[in-house]
Length: 510
Image (tube, rainbow, N blue to C red):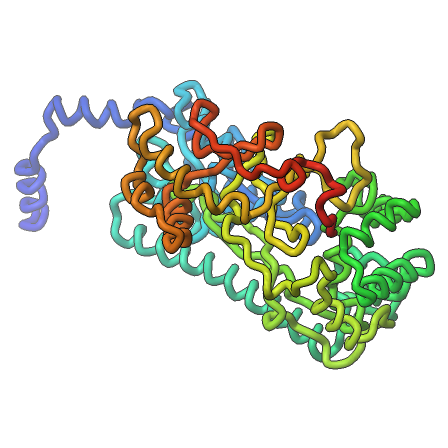
């Protein structure tokens, strides 16, 4: 035996032999729960495709599943699948149907799988979603396998953690870049080309063919561009509405006239594009929206109602964001440099219609001031009284849910009216009653009771608003109270004609 061989034998003799405890622990690791058939892991596959229209769910599912199967080959088999279709990566796992089902199964010891495998990071996680889900997986003893780390993710390895953070930022950056590029392109197409960018055509227009799509690839697929053209059936209605508005008629009066004439409302004129609407008749909001739409000038206008992401629940940021649409100010609109389609109203008339105010009394709107706006509630229906101009003076009324744009219901109660000058003299007395009612002090009532002079009316009203006090007016007894039904009340006014709900005593305005 040579010298080298002698050294090898000596080294083997000195090598420590595992004890029984170590051998027992190693045997447990080989036969730990979750492994079947000689150490084969059972995997649940998760995948996602964001849109059905632009991505083929079948092809995407097959590709992601193949990547997952290649990753776990020789380690385990996939026994369950969770695949979300049409869900954005921005949605947290709890708000995607299939990922939520996977999370719900984690707590079930009989779920039938031991690990999760994902074909692509971006299909599962976005931003900081991994950081919120990893502790949950670890808590239930479920491992996570991903191609980006070449296998199982080590929850406590620094390099794996850094990789996950970098991938999350990259996933978020991809969405942000796409959103910026799309918005920039749409703004340029509107401004320079006046291109129709999709959506339902405004009432008064219909879609017309505008030739092949400007994008050569889309044109090769047979896609066509579109433009707006006046609808012979509805365009005259829009032109009439603007004419009425320029003549000084209110939106409510225009609405009533359309309903009285039996003109089909937009959802009834185009039921195919409005299956979610009632089609019962014109509403005040519909008329106001048409009169405020600048696309009737022939210009293409974009970004009037952009969408933005807001937290679903500020108290629980883990629920992520949701998209909401909010009206943009005119300075934020993108308006085409040149006319894009036939106009139904001139630009000058459209601007004039925006500044038109229907006359509502001897004084102009700028001269009107309602001191008690929002402070008085109706004793019959509980609604807040709305401000109105009555016989040249500020007043408040309740129409019990009735809109001036619809035909009145004869069975409804008569309108309730009360003039402001009948209420103001009694505010100080109401403050004193409020302070000492049933011996129960009200927050801020001590300061209210001290404001009994006529010069303190404005301060008294401010204090009422700050304390959240609501005055309730009962038209039957012409009484006013501050508080619940058991609170003391005062009679306001002695002339029944001033406060009784008779509509012929008050100038009705639309």
